[in-house]
Amino acid sequence: MSNAPVNKGRRRFLTITTSVVGGVGAAAVAVPFIKSWNPSAKAKAAGAPVEVDISKLEIGQMVRVEWRGKPVWVVRRSPVILEGLGVISEQLRDPESGEPQQPTYATNSHRSVKPEIFIAVGICTHLGCSPTYLPDTFSEQVNGVASGFFCPCHGSKFDMAGRVFEGVPAPLNLVVPPHQFVDDNTIIVGIDGEAV
Image (cartoon, rainbow, N blue to C red):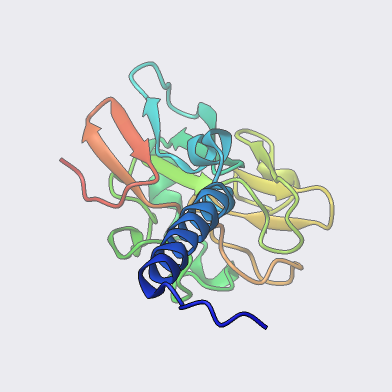
């Protein structure tokens, strides 16, 4: 057993140095680990807003874009289609859009900011299939209704405002995503806003 005097300054220096080196090492390991929790660039891009040019969209025509990995439909409706939306209310499960399937600015009979432009996530609210747009032959599915969306997987039917008909498997209207009109020809899907 040695009776050499204890060098307290040296001991303090070694303790501080070891603590600092350990802290730097822990930070060096923690930074990449915590960074790995952030979404990838691909994931960030998938959730980013999508700009849609509707300048060449004809009456009755539909454009499909992808937002957050889901198909989004943009359809230009005719005045005749808009007039017909009020006629079929008694055949619909939720004609007044009481369920929160759309932003507040699209809670109206045509479920859109601008009546002639309908925007919806193209996924059936039953089991997630993608309905088919039938611009001229929907009357084969619902008598007297010329245009609509039909899900061939289980037979769900939606009108031209994305409202679900009674007696089909889908429980809710189609989802209207947040969107904003930048001008008459440009929509941004993924950002809430009213018409310009």
